[in-house]
Amino acid sequence: MQTLDKTQAKFAQLAAHLREVTDIESASSLLHWDQSTYMPAKGASARGRQLATLKQISHEKFTDPKIGELLEDLRFYEQTLPYDSTAASLIRIARRDYDRAARVPATFMSALCRHQADCYEVWAAARAANNFAAVEPYLEKTLELSRQYAEFFPGYEHIADPLIDRSDYGMKVSLLRPLFAKLREELVPIVEAITSQPPADDSCLHQDFPESQQLEFTRKVVERMGFDFQRGRQDTTLHPFMTNFSIDDVRITTRVYEDHLDQALFSSIHEAGHALYELGNSPEFEGTLLAGGISSGLHESQSRLWENMVGRSRGFWECFYPQLQGVFLRQLGHVSTDAFYRAINKVSRSLIRTDADEVTYNLHVAIRFDLELAMVEGKLAVRDLPEAWNERYKTDLGVVPSTDSEGAMQDVHWYVGTIGGMFQGYTLGNLMSAQFYETAVKINPEIPVEIERGNFTVLHDWLKQNIYQHGRKYTAVELIDRVTGSPLTIDPFIRYIRHKYGEFYVI
View 1 (cartoon, helix red, strand yellow):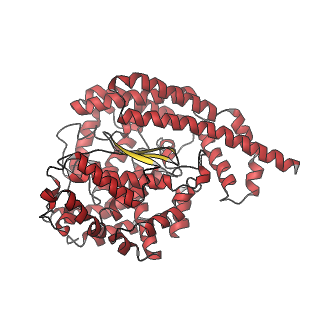
View 2 (view 1 turned 90 degrees about the vertical axis):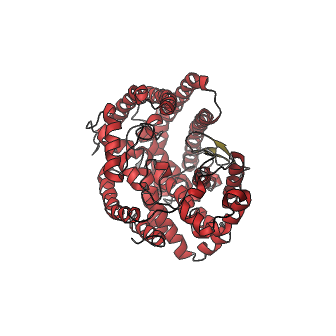
View 3 (view 1 turned 30 degrees about the vertical axis):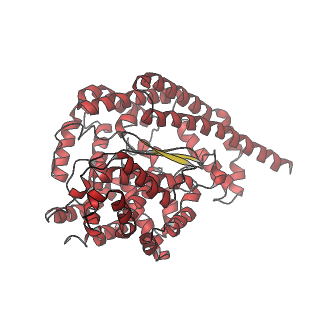
């Protein structure tokens, strides 16, 4: 009994120490959220310093040798517990995170964080001015730091693997390249077939839609989906995102274009999908490493599931379109449900990833994935990125950006993160979303009918039960197999695309 008491005391010490780390990380996330929403422009320099300080403190605290000692002392205790127990899972995830973090000096993480904050501010101004030259030296520094990070993990198969592992644990270039190639092989003929036919008319989306009315409508939609405004809020920003500071404080952001209706609408649904995942975590995970999402791919699967398979479905708009017409009667009163449905699902060879339709979206991701691999491999210099970007868009999508703001500067990821490991999660999310949704409907065939009635409870409850409540307890690979009964595959996604767009086009 004494030994058990000592073991439990050590587990309590570990949990308390880890809670301090998560509290510091939550404070850092709050500063990031403020920087992207309300912070005055002149606060950027100080904010970078503050974030760097918090990152160094949290990294030093998390990599304290005391943590390593506690994890080692608790190894036998972990083995005596069921694999999926909360205690065993916390020890397992803490050991995995600790082993990774302990390889990276706190001073490096502080420098990286400070640089990322500075780079973000320069990127925002450079993007607005279409001035890649202004941000180029910062991006070169990002590349240098990204390669340095990878070198803390000797023995990797590919230099990008440690970077990918940060957000999609267990995924490697050797797995992703063939997966993306197979997906591209399926998608390119579909894109060519669809874009050779008359495009859908989406002019109804490009009218005057006042911001306040858009935001009011999107708020009602995400609240109906299950987003709890007592546990979260929505604000506007340059590049929409979701962040959380606790299970009961989850924030979403959107951006509004008054001449483009579907921007705020679908970015809100998308970010709310991320938020539902966080809000659905088991309450006992609060303040622990088990709270949150497993990986960027798994997290993206939830946002894409809600945005596309639910939010862009015909059934969804059978319910919500009359309400939208009521808000924008002058603009949409003469537009039928079918015409609106076709407009929001228009397929085209476009320049902007976040505006891309479901059919072409993964081609946008593949371009970014290949370019960042080329940069970290040393095959592509930062100064040549805009030209390489434009050439790939011409080759893969038949369009060429007229400005670098539409090209190499359009996404924030490389300018606020690393080069390597930043984009694969989007395609992984698309594939997972189809596999999860197909499974959910097989088990609950009434889901599409309930969506048409504006009732998302059956789907939301299934997702909470099978995915959300588990937080980070399982790896993405484990959870996919646990929930769907098979490993990750492109087949459900391709079936979904062919079925849905086969209603509009000959493919």
